[in-house]
Length: 495
Image (cartoon, rainbow, N blue to C red; front, side, top):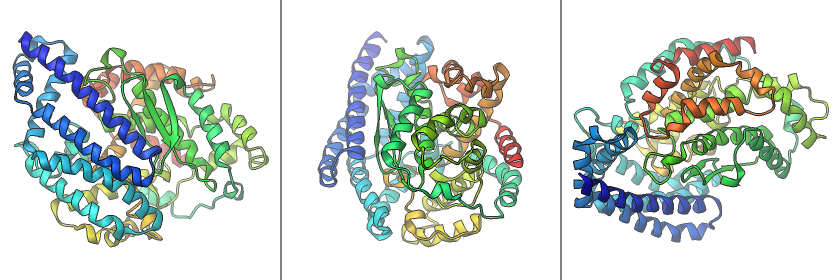
């Protein structure tokens, strides 16, 4: 067993190094690289992907993982969990033909700039050939990786949120449909008017200045991370000491960058607050995308849209946008950022209507993977379903089927984690309030107490445990969507 462990640790160093290379290339392609550079760089992504595949499927590495898996009861808890994950990852990777594995990495690298161009030009047909190939691979992937327990769309869901299948998501979304959807329709029946002050021009450089202020409020360690700009805000990182976020600035919608910043910094805090002992292992970073989203949505909505938070920071916002906000009161600002309305863009949606956007994508993905819906029919189907869900029809594909970048990356199965994360955030909030008054703590000027609670209950574990286990440790119970539904109904009944 000692030989197996030594070899595993040796190979792990190489896997971690390749993960770093992939992280840096991806970051560069989405932030600084020119359009033609991205096309050239994607070829290198294919090489790195091929190297990763060979490491994971190397017979000696597979044997080492198998030996450690069979003797995992003698390993410490962190390594035991890591070996369980490695065993599954090796097994799954071997099921995918190497040429397909490598070609797919190159495909998704090339698809991203085409997606951005298609969205910018409102041209779905430009992106369609790439998306068709991505969907084709995902459908084949469900066949390659199916087990007795996981088949079809469940295979993809499990990659983003272990232990959550269509059956569990269906139960969750059915609870939302039963209690929340009627309430949403009632609250949003009358279109909300955007106040004139919010329609003014808010210069991007001043938005960026306030976002830098917010990162300080949230105690993001700027010596271990940066913020740049991209088409779609995101967070990426490598261990606790290199965590990067991006933002996007719309001068006619200044609050977009504010809440994107809070959201992405929520992700970043999770990464920065993992236990440092997990650096250099395969157990660092968030435990799952659902748990990661619970952190970003917690900060964005529960913290970032409450009166206690803005009672401290609204003065700073007004000082930066002195002319635009000179006559705006705190009450008027809070009413604006907590308006519930039927809107087209998921990332700009209020927290009440947000889960409906996710439900739409969840249903579409199920049909696509089953082969009941083809890519060429996506725009029309999207518009019809959106009309059914929201009572409004997208003006064009840029604010419809092209609005999200996820399918360009091949991330089918990702979207449901957004709603799951929002619900987990409410459950964590309920239990956090049992230990201290969350809103009162925000009046101290930073999120220090919240950060520390989440660090001890969630962040420090990294991905060394399954997400449902971490949730049980933090709250003492399994996932319960009632906290989420109760939170939304109680809040928006008052609003």
